[in-house]
Length: 145
Image (cartoon, rainbow, N blue to C red; front, side, top):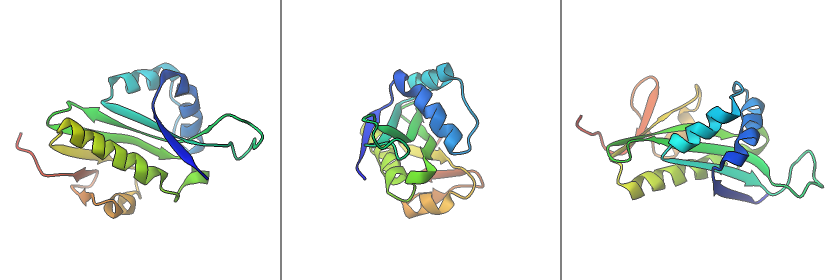
């Protein structure tokens, strides 16, 4: 199945809420999702070309998202890396994380950390992230300050 990636747009927020619920996350207010994207350095969504439930639907099916927050200079934090359960293990999460890291590097951010769900350590280790402490992972050199 082919996947496409696009910058998050406010009109996608209701679909992201459906994705959150499908992944077992709590529902979020649509306006909160939109505001979080607006306040983020970067936010990206992933689409499948067809909905696995409604195969005749011409609309793309939202299958993933991720966002990067921070000051854009010293540090950034990767949040909300989410992939629909029916589309996991197909490289979507990896691609979203790589795109976020690439964007952080383009900005010149010194350090990128992430907030990961319990049990996600193997995923981040496989992508080259190193364990920082019990709750955080980082990619890049430590910064002073």
